[in-house]
Amino acid sequence: MMSAVQARELWANSEEIVSAAEVQASLDRMAAEITAKMGDAFPLVLSVMGGAVVFTGMLLPKLAFPLEFDYIHLSRYNNKTVGGEMQWRVAPRESVKDRVVLVLDDILDEGETMAAIRERIMDMGAKEFHAAVLCEKTLTKIKPMHPDFCGFAVPDRYVFGCGMDAKGYWRNLDSIRALV
Image (cartoon, rainbow, N blue to C red; front, side, top):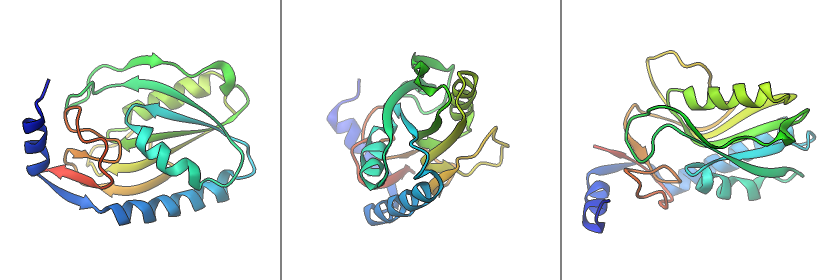
């Protein structure tokens, strides 16, 4: 466990790459895009815990259409800076069958987690699958998928804030920072 002093050192050794105002403007843009594409579909919206909790809380009030909401929990990071083995903690419920599903997550890094979520949801009988992320990391590596809706492309650095953590801390920031 990290001390408060060590957590503050993480913040001090980072730089803001997306301001709080830019985050809000992006959320407005994404909400308009999602509404245009899915506003008549009565979708099931699934938030990926725990990173997407802040992003979800900021985006949902901007979606001006009826939807159902639930969550899933699949992790590859477990407070580390590199992804490991995928662990389903809370799988999608049967309510995805014959539904248009929108999955919200904080970041699409290598795309492996979201691809696994898409596969599981489609295997459970969803009619359509859409992904919305606050950030997509710019990588040279080919990804198994890209999000349908994305707030920002971020550099291939360790980013945190707006639900994304730095070693378990700083999810509560309203801006996005990158470790230097």
